[in-house]
Length: 224
Image (tube, rainbow, N blue to C red):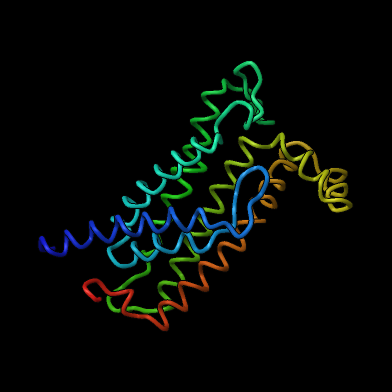
């Protein structure tokens, strides 16, 4: 890769990361305990990975993850009040740990890993490909993010299951009457995170396919 292309890659990466941050703030819907449906905030990182490869995409996605962590801290996401910790102790429903350990675990899963997997959006690119390859990458990357959020919700937010199912009427009553313990925590995480991640996956995947189909020049490095 020549110096001009390297410079272009760095500049484009900075712009794509900034665009993802901005789009993540344009929330179509926001859940009360975290998670939002955004205006295709994952797509710029997936496109960047497709243009320059999954290794560079993953590196860039880690920078994006770091910025999202900072934004989360500014919003008060990791405070004891927000997490429901008492006297420096956090109960996840599965285990009881120091508050700081919970914060580290949540950051590693819900931020670092959840956004780093977006860098895999370009893993299906082989030569001059198009809509199908970008679509598959978008589906894979966004679904992996969903899986990571499920894991985080199960491990760290199981105690919110009773509150959540108590808010959704007869369905919630049926769930709490049928399931309990870790299984209830897992189902809660799948459903709660699905409330925003499934629409995100659909929106992002559709946008990726349409962009690749009607603006294929966006997939190629070195095009205007």
